Length: 363
Ligand code: NAP
Image 1 (cartoon, rainbow, N blue to C red):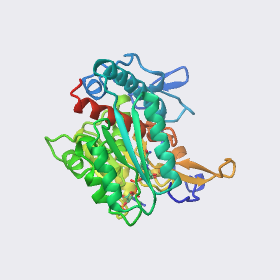
Image 2: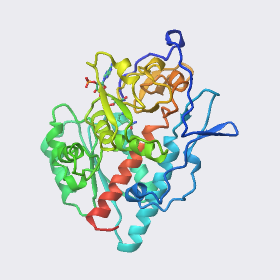
Image 3: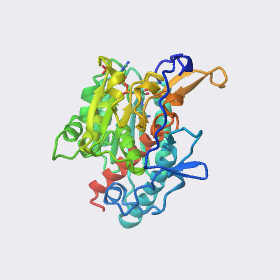
Image 4: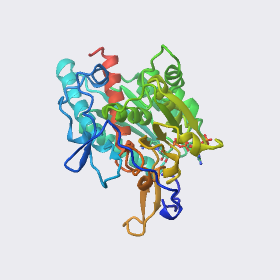
């Protein structure tokens, strides 16, 4: 987890709030706003992703609650992730029954960072919950790069393993690039291999895997029926793991993209042009109400701890976007927590399932 920054989304510095403009995608029903139904499983896009056996009726997870009259609809990442995990669980059982193969995910954890250990534990639990086998190698902080490379090589050769994940960050004495490049492209479920990113960037090429967090962002837009084609999208942040692949994905979906980063001169003005904002910065409440075009859709990837004396932990998590201001202006927004976070793990499971199907030629 990044270092704690004690900032809040103070209304004293709140710019004039713009009036909420209803988005035709949403309709009101007994005081709640419901998003358009999930893309039904008959949709080819959804089928190709999950070969879904999910119910064609809108799931309760697709509903969005309305806190106040002028609030944006809440994009319920937790609910959507749960639905995706149920779909994966069904697919895993189907494959096991048909060909006796169970997908396997291997995680390599180096060192004893508490946050990394928690992420790995959560991934393991998530695998168990959908019937995916998990494998784990823990190496001490002072391991050599060669030892990590050897672990990767063993998993590359292991037919029970269909996905390999090297938990980042690695200790500073290791060359992260060397290690990520050594993961077999066929098992690169994190999607960080340069060949997968390169294919993502090229027209007419398809990556074997798409990085999980940006994939989760786009999946949320799809499942809520939010159109991307022809829209103006702004991605704030350009990291290799979130911002850059998110921008590439939006471009593949025919949005027109601007990328805002730490050297961008007029981020507020650029962001205000967006129909869709994906923010992956790591700065609490950086995106204020005045940055947002009325009716925009906001996907907030940021996870930032801010001081909260009322919380037993002494802090709470907020996004990059000032939620209380944004929800008065946007048409839909992901909460933090409960938005993109749960989707990241769901996409990791989805990538692992897809890998095992591809390797065993199972449709
Ligand atoms: P990162 O590698 O630190 O990248 C941050 C990006 O934000 C960089 O491109 C940086 O620009 C840009 N940036 C920093 N300050 C800025 C500013 N004031 N204005 C505009 N752009 C600015 O972070 P990351 O790994 O992408 O993660 C970003 C956030 O997402 C973090 O809060 C992280 O915890 C969260 N996250 C969440 C999930 C999830 O599952 N929900 C997954 C991954 C990350 P430069 O390139 O110019 O330095």
